[in-house]
Length: 435
Image (cartoon, rainbow, N blue to C red; front, side, top):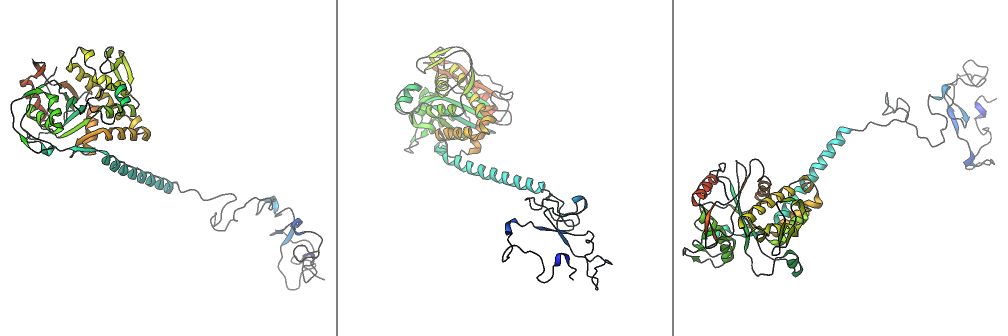
């Protein structure tokens, strides 16, 4: 007589199914037997002391049940019923990873949030640095460094702070015939200065001084920018914008320095097309128009009040002169007001933090700016930041002090100009008032 359950010895193992079996029951329909561990042995099957106990005390063997899974009391001491239903179970306690070495039922290791945050921070910083460096070199390559200030002779001593000569030219370079018509620029050849300003930056806030293009100045001796020939002074009295028309930026810088005694550190020039493109790139500039303006020559047709100007309207506004009783002084005030508003718009988070605005704005500005050979992106950024703060509490904007006119040219007040220049050279708070 065989004491093993269901006759598990030799070939007496009951009906067999599966590979190589002669049984009629297909393998796919077989119900997997489950192991019954830890419970009492069935009666008459080898329990210690039982009637059929083997003579050598064979230990209790696992028993198997069909279908129901592990038949432990309470159903919670191992694999629950439904073993073949697709559920995934963790390791039993005592295995690697859980309490005492194993995973609890359905548990997984807690995520290492400290490590994840660290990796995310490193990634973001790396992306930021790479983008910043790439943007710097891209922007630096677009600067048109065409003005050589080393050609300017007999220069005043450098003072404290930094002085920029900012010039708006009537250059029509890059404009199509249709654009010239829509912008009311005309088709004159060459280029002339349409506006000129000195921006001083230092420890006492920025100071923006407009130099009316009709200012009466003397053309000093100078070295030709192309010929290299030195031209002696003849005492000629001309309008300030004639210096630019005669020999370009270098002679203009030489003339401004000679007539003011102020050292110019950097030169920045922008034409009609570039100005309009920058305004459009930032989505327009909001400004408060002091009164209705209609000027057929500049194309301005604007109503009084706060409004947002696009590139075409902005260019017409800053060029308007005849709608202001022909006053170049009133026109320069409008130019100062608008440039401060434009710089403020460029520096807003909505532009700086939005790459879809920032890069078109930078591209439009850098493509159209002409600067001196020593101008860096840092210098240019400092200039725009100072322009933004001109109308703040520490900033000052003014026209060059005027004492009268001669032959239609505006004559500077020499005493006030001397005081103004001394204050700028020493980076002191400006006390002089302009017209």
